[in-house]
Image (cartoon, rainbow, N blue to C red; front, side):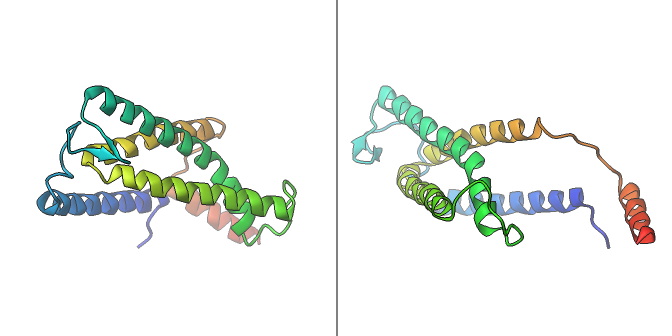
Amino acid sequence: MYLTINKKIQICITVNFSLLVIIAAFVFNYADSKMLRVGYSKDLIVMGIVIDTSTKYLFLHICIFFVEFWHSIIYEYANPIMYFNVFDADKKVITDFGKTELQIYAQSLWFLTTLKHGIMTLVAIQQIDITLCKIVYSEIAIAIVIYNVLKNKHFVKNSFEDNINLTELTIQQT
């Protein structure tokens, strides 16, 4: 059975969503009730700061938004450049960077990203609302990046039959 690329992606998204539902069911059934709280309280302590007022809670979300949004913008633009220059086995000649320069840039990007993830994990594990907002803030930035990257591309959607005919034509020509 042949699956189109669209069908493969649809299956992957469906399976991914199903896994998320299963994980969410476990979390909401077995997690500590303190983690599932929403909003500020005298028990919400983030990085040693008690978040017990709406002002502190709002400031916390502004900080999380700022960190997640700008991290995602920077990472989504820079990571593909670093990753493909370093790990693409077919790219044997690097013209944009010197060897040491690429090493320093790649290591710096990935070290700072890992460090940020570690710190933000400490923040996110406090409550489910903080975790979900952290994810949403990051996804807003990623949607902007995807939109900006895709707006510079031209799309011609082929049907399955067109792809088969193109493949047959290519085989016949060789």
